[in-house]
Image 1 (tube, helix red, strand yellow):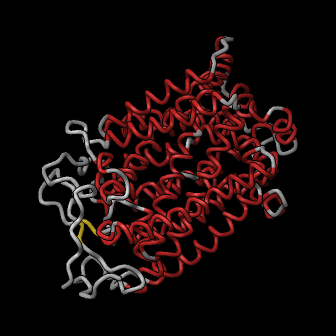
Image 2 (cartoon, helix red, strand yellow; image 1 turned 90 degrees about the horizontal axis):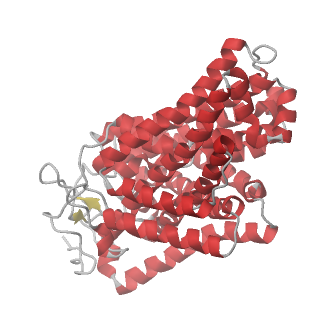
Image 3 (cartoon, one colour; image 1 turned 180 degrees about the vertical axis):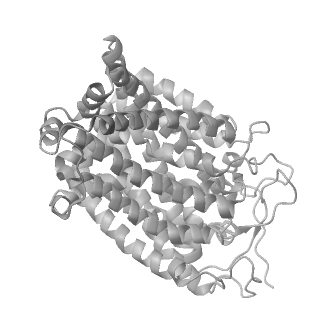
Length: 521
């Protein structure tokens, strides 16, 4: 059988004795905390849902349900493939299996830029929400930049510590932010709302309105981060079961919870009055509702928990980015130093330090340019990141049926063909909706919006160029890109010697079948 070229010393994975990520550290609940925290439910509800109500009317809750259903369909093929692909590269590994190494490397670069965009922009939101909270609770005027820089240090420390430490922190913060929303909903339900409870929000006449397209765009954005379950495969207990369960729990919880909370806020004001209230003070809609139905003290708590919600989202994305960087360093695509794992905490600490440094550079650059931390740092950096992650989901949905058409497997057609093809069509519509309504996300000029949208295909094309460069100048790295890892030798190890796997378009065998003896192109 032809041998895969030996990796060069510059890109070789660490020796078997090197510290590795902590195995079996995360259960279903832990991973669910990571992915739901990344979505920042309280921030999404209090900060974005009022705009969705303003645009879509009382039918806004149905938009969140429709987005959740779409992503649940995507999760069917996505989680099925997670049982067949053991690489730590998540999205790019799946895409490589189905669509080939060039597309996979393009996807890897897009994932790295996309997740960084989703996180770094949020430091602007951390600064503004903290300043708003300090002003609301104590009348203090707090500058945003020191808060954002302090947040960078705090998130770095959270990522530096062990993954189970991060899971515990996120568990506490997530309970706090969802708890305050549950408290609001309970108050509305107990008092019967403004005019009694009504299901009009889910009637066809309320849903089938022109503004629903804009609501769907906001709703899809609200789920960003749920797909990161597979990033934690190497640290999960029984990943073949844990990852699918965590994915379905995350998308199911977010879809139902978002729709329920938005519906209760509509009940709090009344179907007619809520539009007026959202128009007059969208930022204060949720605070006014909880003040009326629970009390001013609960509004004060909501202010505090919005800040902790943003911190939880930052930590969740930071951990996801670190593991992508670790995987790409092990591939030889990023510098090998980023693949080092801390001997005590078992965290990719150098990848975390690099990500924090990048965040500091971006935050300081926007500050020095006099940019607004919300309208420019958050929205301009977040938006291409969000579109990039949606594009990755689309590529992954396309890759699933292509992979299973070539691989030997015992999965049914619903999981391997029908669901992923349906998800690909729905995700294409979702991306179109987001791009067509991008001005609602960025509040920027058409020129700026064009640049922000063009960044996504631009990064992907740069990834294709990188793939060609690797194939030409570093063929050993290209040959083993996204290869299946070898089984761990003993507890505490993670795979360090990748097994060669054939590249698309040659048939790909499932992990349980013998490798194809034909050489990779």
